[in-house]
Amino acid sequence: MKSGLPFTFLLLLLLSACNNTPPPADATETETPEAAPEASWEPLFSADLSNAEFQENVWTVENGELTASEDQAIWTTREYDNFVLDLEFKNAPGTNSGVIVYCTDKEDWIPNSVEVQIADDYAQQWAESPKDWQCGAIFGHLPAKEQQVVHPPGEWNHYTITCIDQQIKVELNGQEVTNMDMSKWTSATTNPDGSPIPEWLSTPFAELPTKGYIGLQGKHAGAPVWFRNVRIRELN
Image (cartoon, rainbow, N blue to C red; front, side, top):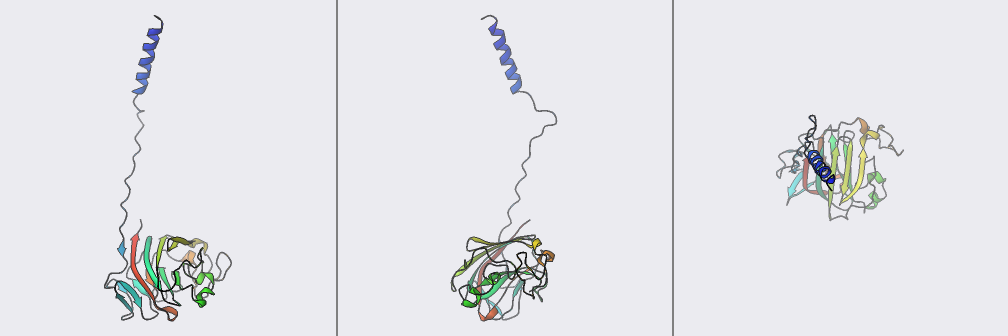
């Protein structure tokens, strides 16, 4: 008993010293950086279209719905690079339209942009067209992974399009339907899977700048399309 008491006392002192040992002189606390505030959503176009570029009397807004009477696009007046574009669209029977991103030439936009296809896939002419001409596709380049996700004509659809450098992700009605890495599209004539690219799309996506104007295609192929709640959130 007499020999155990000093040992116990010594053990207690040792444990106390270990618990109070200061950190090494070069040790520092890991600082957690503050999260950058999330950018807020903003309307892509103002209600009076004063910040849009379009042919007069072609595009109109009524009850918050944007539509065109001719095959003319409506454009932003400034360029965007990294962003999320969120919108709703409604087809008529036979609609063939699109959401245009990374446009570097509004006068000659077809070979100088990326078009996210809008189409009435229930119409025979589009149901029987190449898959990369159908709704949710990157037109002429990459079909949607899921077919006929678009709602029938007369019903509203929801697009969320995320563009980060050469990465483009498309969600249609809550499903991811397309995910593209533009750097893989090095040819102007052939897609990576060997399928042909329409001859009028002459710029390889790998060479297309990833900063440009955003546009909406108008009444193409004789059928109208309607848009509403078109908003954008820019990304760092």
